[in-house]
Image 1 (tube, rainbow, N blue to C red):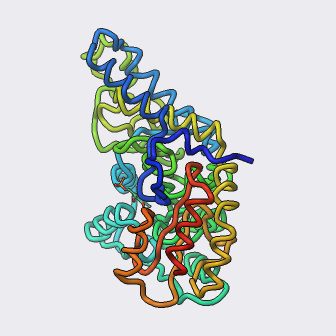
Image 2 (cartoon, rainbow, N blue to C red; image 1 turned 90 degrees about the vertical axis):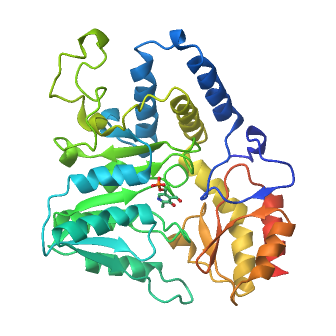
Length: 382
Ligand SMILES: Cc1ncc(COP(=O)(O)O)c(C=O)c1O
């Protein structure tokens, strides 16, 4: 059982930061890696050809351990989720009459690529609506609706593991199985879960899993990681950079142009992926996640908030059933519309959460403690 790790982070005393779903604070060690990276970059003679490859490969190895992927070369380094998904969209083979399945109010980066593909090729975008909220939760029915929406004309099922607004959990094993039965690509945005909620690529078997690095992976902004399965092995990347080509580590030979790419998903790396500041930060962040372990992070968040959620429910707040939501990210919906008064109560107590639609999104991590949760409870039930 983990204890609070507040002292590993640089959050100001008195701030109740319950908003990792917005952006993780940098751990001291991650920040130090960034500063060391800038210092090294100031003196380029310290950067050798191997540095273009070894740090990237380390990041691939660390991330593949977090998601239980057996081959680190299945991981591409991307700058954003939209980039990782654009790569998928570029490699979808589908045409008029086919469809793409997404969720209502899904994060826009996991919608716009599909809207474009649909518009260009005559596909239908099937948005699976959330059922009305009801006592006991609605997620089971929402999941059932997703399964029903997938059919033989489905080209892509593009979902998150938990909904970004309120942490509703999607049963990716069942949905993935249904997608495979229908020969649809199964594409997961893991940004709001991977790092704080267990994800096992060998069990879930996504064709692609894309994660931004700056939330639950605790890394810097403008970094992301994408797993691409075998179906993409011969695909076309968005860019044709030099470093993704076979033998690109032999700098003297770079003008002996080659058609072959480096292994598996490395072809999908963004250009200049060997960022000498951001990659060491990301590597340190992933090491922290691995050291703490994802199940223990999630369990810490659960234990921390179990009393909070019970007390809020007693006061009429609507929260999804525990088994169908993240403990690291969940929406609490007040009995009446919340307004400016709530926002100012939160601000007065120096509580940072996000207001997403009609939900107050609470997203704790290891730097939070009982005081943070008590402050939130106090602000919400006043
Ligand atoms: C579910 C989800 N996906 C992706 C992102 C970020 O997308 P991008 O990297 O394209 O900016 C966010 C940011 O809040 C998110 O919540």
